[in-house]
Length: 250
Image (cartoon, one colour):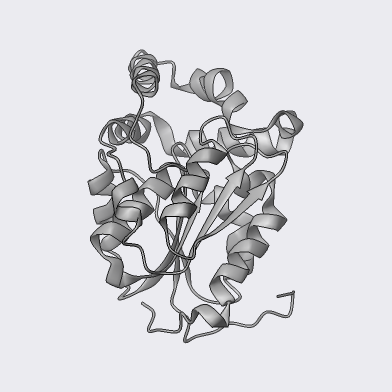
């Protein structure tokens, strides 16, 4: 596909789910391109459990839709696909994991919740999270850093606390992956410290026909770190006629 992309009114809409402390800015480059093809909706995750977040997605007035999620958004996307497989035409899972939380993860979320309640929310992203979100090759980019901090600011402490609570509600989603029947794309940053490549291979191996794409020298926020590559992957995922996703939209 190229700059000559034209809208396809008969294509299903695309729903994008950002990760924790992320907003629609995460998908800015991808949205600009995908909107040439179909309707694009972004659902910010504000519920206090994975199921509540899935409810928000399923409340969209779209009979069927293609669904893409990053990190926590990917976890919610898998939960949605488990609950309402008949509504999901395609699934894209980026920088995520289907595994249940580890004890050290729970401890880290609790520590961030305590700091947030103590009024330290503004310090958490630059001090604790940025090194884990961006690859060292990109961590010094002032535009990328500014976008990450702006997304956190837009999220705010109240929503962040609900997102941390939702993280605690995660379960093992791996058993349900073998029931996924829609075309599925899995995208991993090769050097993602939060969602390792092995977790992505696990997802791709479980979903029949899933395609795994690995982005070299990339950390957790793949749509920001590799905007052109991720955009092309999503366009191909959405427009591959062999996968046949034509349907009624919202």
